[in-house]
Length: 332
Ligand code: NAD
Ligand code: UFG
Image 1 (cartoon, rainbow, N blue to C red):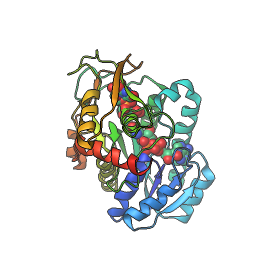
Image 2 (tube, helix red, strand yellow; image 1 turned 90 degrees about the vertical axis):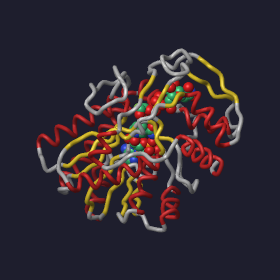
Image 3 (tube, rainbow, N blue to C red; image 1 turned 90 degrees about the horizontal axis):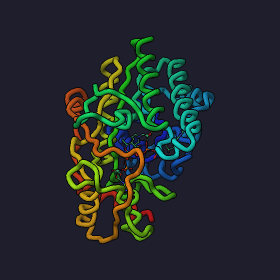
């Protein structure tokens, strides 16, 4: 069975391609390489010892998508392609609305033209806004605090409307919590070129001497040690969740959303201390002001994904810290 993976050379996409190939699926990738590199395809092939069909192109371009569907018998699509930097989306909202919405609508139109009506969509815990209580369940109220998050919520709504209009669609919306870690091989992972916005990529750059000191954004939150608490999930566990979602949408026609998280919340200081311990490294951190827009704590109730997809995360925080460091040490 052939799966089209948009954004398949990106961080989560590349790990998902590995899991798809390992589970006997054929993989076709489209990526415009705006936030990834062509050599990721070779690395996916090296890890799995299987071939991938790669198209360099943009999901906002109907012609290339049509060509892909003509040249390949696609059974389902996993849609990762999009921009994801929260801060940049506040500064340049049109860039985010244009790319994230246009790529999704164009893709859905071409899928519809070819009668391929099965899609897994990358959403985010950001659609829960500032949750009133924890852990977060899928039926909590949805709201957003930045244009990036709004694009995710808008696409979720587009997918629900599409299903209402045509019940042949089968749609899994996956709301990721905080993906970190990397494949054990150290061949694929996350290694932003710029100064990272997210905690783990920043810690890794400090631990490898590329940056001076980790800035801890506030220690006066209403959490166990005052620093922000998040549900970090190993990217390989997350990737495996996509295989379960594909199995689900192939079996049944509906639209549904699933939290992909571990259910455990770790504070910034817990992550820093665990990272130092398991990797036997030392580095500096300092407490600075809160980052505007951040919430105290965010972690999933993952029981619906367990029940409906038969999926749960297996890796712990130690593995996540080890694998993140291993990847960047091998790819400095
Ligand atoms: P990533 O940037 O590593 O991967 C996205 C890929 O899509 C990149 O390779 C990029 O080149 C490509 N791309 C972007 N726009 C495109 C377009 N118009 N046409 C073709 N390719 C395009 O990001 P990621 O961390 O792997 O995230 C994948 C998806 O998961 C995104 O939709 C993101 O919003 C979502 N998500 C990520 C996180 C996270 O913390 N990483 C959390 C929640 C949701
Ligand atoms: N943090 C620091 N220092 C840093 C970076 C982050 O202290 O240099 C703290 C933040 O304040 C927060 C925690 O570390 O308490 C995690 O921050 P991240 O930036 O790594 O992740 P967020 O939870 O803020 O956001 C991420 C993605 C969003 C996504 C959200 C929910 O960046 O796209 O998870 O899935 F929407």
